[in-house]
Length: 405
Ligand SMILES: C[S@@+](CC[C@H](N)C(=O)[O-])C[C@H]1O[C@@H](n2cnc3c(N)ncnc32)[C@H](O)[C@@H]1O
Image 1 (cartoon, rainbow, N blue to C red):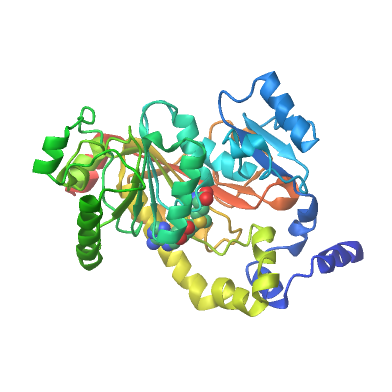
Image 2 (tube, protein in one colour):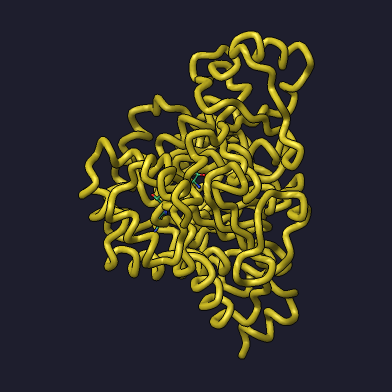
């Protein structure tokens, strides 16, 4: 590194342990030097982009919104602009999401009617974008192992009025097995007598559950903690859940059925060391650098993480229907959590095929070590760091052959 770069890196005041981590993983710390000027990104919800609405937002933030040329509906703002106090934000017309995260969701190529699984949902920015791309058809299922984090996602989708087609489960993404509710033609409506008689029918979701239902859910939670069933903590009116029985929602499927009735799209935005996001790393300045070493950089933990990442990817792929596509992303830039995981996964899954990400030629990222996989690095992309790979599940006939062999 030349002297100027060394000086810029030292201005970042990165802790020794993090610099060692970067060094061990072959990452150049200079990729973070422009992080103080990395813009913030917002996405305007469809229908909120009229000239008048944009002008109102601009007046409030006192900045002319500039649309990203490579990602539709994304605008960038100077890093110091605060959107939380704006009316547009309070009204749920705009939400903050990094452009690289937006690219990962856009790689899914979501079409109307898709049933989408988001296996590591919280805090939920990508889920919001999935729901906002789905519009008024299809469904999204969000899963996260951390209940308090998923509860924040529930708040988020409700705040942006995006929860209508969404259901959220607290569950381990490495074993989650529930299918989209595509087998039922549409959710049946039920009257009060039916609810009384058949108490297992899901009524419309409300945060204030009737006493009887709360008691039933608490009991179910108790039992679920023993058998580790996913806990449904939110479902929208058109998520397919309303009017169904618990048996319908929690129905069991054979792998062979998954090929036909599985999810059309799966996002595995896996837990990782978050080293691509210097803002995340710098939070540890307040929490203590020793916490960073213990919670993020510890070698045992990162070894465990790569095992977890592979398991999440494998299970996400298991739940994908034949011909569907899966996007694996992490906000780490280490090879161990990205290319190595992808290579191991491909060596174990004969029906998985890496595919080109449509439109990515316009994105400010570069090809990663494996062809067709991409890396956004903070310096060249002006986004947070992100790795993205896209897979498809080979056609039903090849998959059938795979499952029968
Ligand atoms: C990188 S964050 C996901 C960010 C999210 N996709 C978003 O866009 O806001 C990783 C998430 O994975 C969750 N997680 C960790 N282990 C998990 C597991 N075994 N199953 C499901 N979620 C898990 C964490 O609780 C965390 O919320």
